[in-house]
Length: 260
Image (cartoon, rainbow, N blue to C red; front, side, top):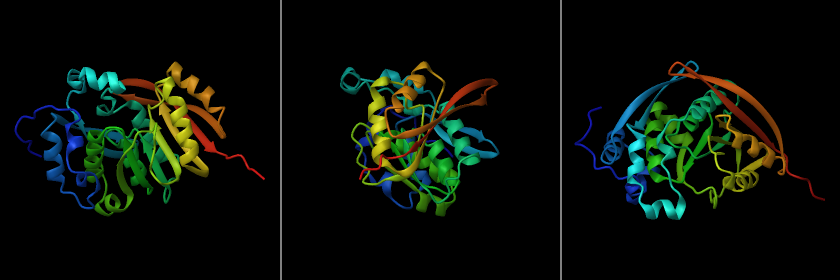
């Protein structure tokens, strides 16, 4: 697809644009691409997830976005453009969903969707998926990637994009499955994330989380033991660019306490 004139970088500016780019049932791919490319230099990355091919639109150089963070933006919320990268944990979560988890017909909520790979994989596996992120710009990338990597009927019927702050979630729904890749990187987020899982999972529902085997991930496992979840922890490996990455997989089953 031919690109427009050189963009005027502006991380976060897309959030001021009309919300129908997130909600229209039949967006035009060229229009959505042009909107994104008006603010970002972009590239398309082919990604193999097991036997499934994907093509994911990304910011060409996410490190440049760091220069766009104003002191006010950082001091108020410590916002960093984590969403702009395709994390290896996302690739493993997508593979987990496609190859080992039966999510067909399930309702799935993705936290911190970023560019959307894992949620799109869940939709490809037959789930109805709500992609969420704090950054509207991230959801525009995710929406474009869903449009380009799903059949038209699956895009229309299985994908929603909703801005959400997991510290104050307001989806108005509960879900059979909640997923997240590399979202447990700060201890201050443990309670908001675990509280959200407890409030937004259906009884018997599952949370599937992946993270790159950091020490903070072990701390999250300890924190999860204080909540009504049964926990299973395992490891996986992802080969990417000739390097093997060890990925921690966290499976939480929600088992609410029965009251009489």
